[in-house]
Length: 408
Image (cartoon, rainbow, N blue to C red):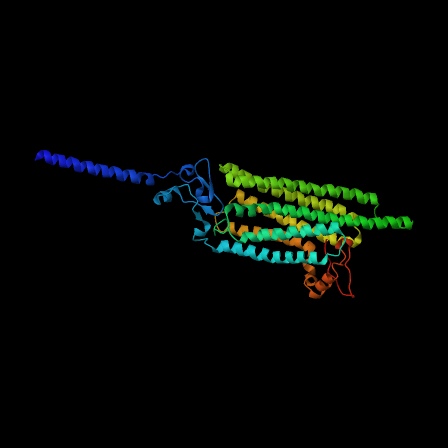
């Protein structure tokens, strides 16, 4: 009897030990989840990049939980599962405020620029100045594309609403800086076209000098050609900087989505916005300095138009410079509170100001009462663009009424 009791006790102990072993084998892996993203979460929940040290570098607006909370939730500490929408003090309000601001500002601008594009094609069909017409259409097309590009950014906000991929959103976000450089350089070609039109005026002066010996002009044709040749080289320097900006943009996209160390990522962003700040400083100072020098060759009839273009382009460059400097400030002293959303709203407003200044070169707001006058528009379309280009310094008149000046 004693031997039977001992055998039964041994069997019960064996079963209990086996059950304990099974319980341990099933619970141990889940309670010891690795905090190294390379092991536990290689893609950082699709909202960040796994770093070489095992942490997750979350994209802007996303963050993970601390190790203590992660352990309590039985999950890896390397994660990017939460967005700014999940923070009670933030929520959707500041994010939707940014989206609405972008949508309203660039929505209105897109409608105006598309309207101006339609007028350009409808009212210039009968013109023969192919070069000036091409420059105008190219610039207006760029402005329309930029406005739509910016408007698309109100669809989502760093992927928080799952309406746009991370790659798509950041492509829109970073390329807008390059886009502005392209527009500025393109507008310089328009600016140079105004100067080249002065050659035709100066040729008339030269002819008058030959026909009328007593006639004296301010400059010789040699002076005009010399300064315009310099202006041509000057504008192509801007194009070279834009090409460099495109290369830097490609590098930014690679670093943003592939960089495996925080140092590489932060240093490249610092370099990225430092480049734009330096570029816009050079653009502003160089444009003002040489623009004032070249004003000496402009006939009086053209000076009003040229000066207005210069002022608008300087405002364009200054707004872009402030945008780059504010981005630099945020990188050096990052915000973790509601101010981050406020400065982003201001950034979009400055970008809108740049685009608005560019659109006013071709559709001045002080002449909007003419641009939206149905009678004048019908008259212009009916004549198939018999409107004198602003590069000629005047606008045509019909039946003694005012005429809209088609800027080239």
